[in-house]
View (tube, helix red, strand yellow):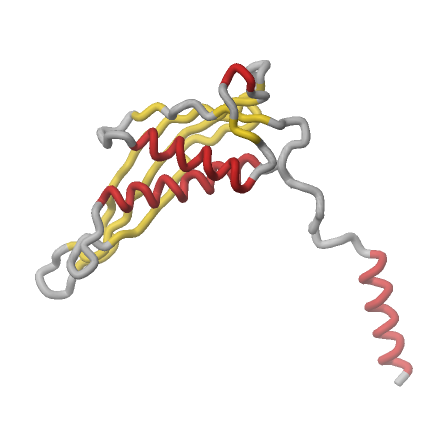
Length: 167
């Protein structure tokens, strides 16, 4: 009985005196930034209007998930500039009969940098990737444009995740 009590006392003391697990109620976004500009990304691919899709998705994601307000570049504390580097359809699976593509994925690759008004780089990522699966075969028959849009949405989430401060 004494051994159990001593073990319980030791566990309680350890939970009180040991450091926490890294959880915080404080925001992980920067306090000194209030506004962000997101000019239309540059597009180095042959896919038309992809840069607009990525820029729109990022703007909406910033407004939805961050404390920042998206404003014009002349009024912003910071600017996020980006380039759509690559957009590839990749084969994921084929049909057993005939070997036709059954499931594909749209792989989007973006470079971006987050810059403050003095020109200093806050964050920078090269080759950031987002993948969205799609099924071009019947009965689903999804269009590549739908997968492209899904990849842009996932890319926006990845970029916003990269805006968070270091722990």
